[in-house]
Image (cartoon, rainbow, N blue to C red; front, side, top):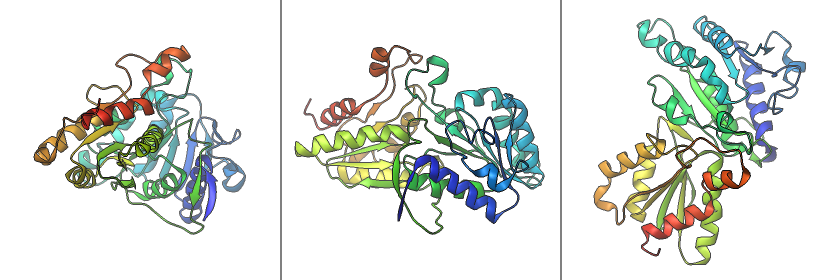
Amino acid sequence: MKVLQFREAIVEAMSEEMRRDESVYLMGEEVAEYNGAYKASKGMLDEFGAKRVIDTPIAELGFSGIAVGSAMGGNRPIVEYMTFNFSLVGIDQIINNAAKIRQMSGGQFNCPIVFRGPTGSAGQLGATHSQAFENWFANTPGLKVVVPSNPYDAKGLLKAAIRDDDPVIFMESEQMYGDKGEVPEGEYILPIGVAEIKREGKDVTVVSFGKIIKEAYKAAEVLEKEGISVEIIDLRTVRPMDHDTIIKSVKKTNRLVILEEAWPFASVSSEITYQVQEKAFDYLDAPIQRITTADTPAPFSPVLLEEWLPNANDVIAAVKKVLYQD
């Protein structure tokens, strides 16, 4: 095993797939000459050249459409958005073309394309640059939505996404690019749609994904000292969602807390809550608790931002509530 930063795992995944398959290429804002806005394509222009690592204008609708047409023509483009907030400019191409073309063409065309970039809050970036759209994209049949939380998962899932014959939304975080973790020396691929139990526990299940899961880990360490055993499930993939792993855990712990970095209305946690109450209602010893951002646009003030975002203390309070210890 070797230790890589999250951004380095992303570079390795893309580079390995580009060496393996000449139809794979990368395009987006500042991915080439600048080595990526967050250095998540560092060195790739030097290795693969300007025909396969392509700097685009600031025109998300345009280059997203070009990528969709290219994918229909037999290529496997990777489209990087500097932030998924900017994907809203190109969302028509993602939702109305990439996600639907297989069905609309009667299976004559598929769209093997990866749309990737940072999601969620990254500090004082204000209301228009701090949004999480996992549930938006997951609401669209035809799209797969992947949100890794560490370098190992990021590399294995990105390689799987690039090889997938359907469009994949691959969501990262500006605040995770410097995170370090062990990654195997050889090639490996992780299956899309399979969650992982990151921490075994017996008293309560906590489900999360993306960078916010780190708050669950912090909370679990504190709660362990109080004799409370927390099982943590990392979804890794929002769509397709691994309901079975969640249900199995809830049947063991009988309690569920869901943590996500998004607004509460029609959220990923809403979907999980529905699935669990339908399939494991009789196993629940307490109402499901979910932790989200506040139901407002993201504030700029650091004091307000701290209140807006979920944190470990919120997780601790929710766990104690389902254990009737609040």
